[in-house]
Image (cartoon, rainbow, N blue to C red; front, side, top):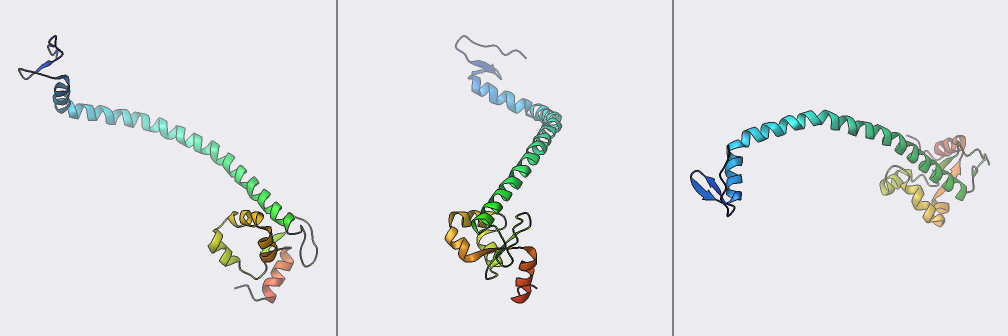
Length: 155
């Protein structure tokens, strides 16, 4: 449908001359269903492509982020163990792969409430080494379990 246009920029709508914006509103109302249908079809066609792209990006970054977090976790853990002496406080065992960071007075639950799960606590203690030395110690797994049994910290 060709709409006659006057030299002053107005359009003829329903026998009357009106502005371009009025013509656009009337055209949209007349063709609304057609426009929405086309939009839905285009969205459905692109949805699978976009989802595949997002999935591929997620899989690539997930592997990278997991490795990055694992390295950060190990770095913080080793820093805290080194700061606390690097060996078991009871027997002197020094293999850092299996040493554990232990709360001296068994206040691990309180620390998890305060800092949450994860490395937030270790990060805090690295910034406050005096508190770390007062609240934490390094134990090997055997000494840690013996301490738990002797103090009746186990369930």
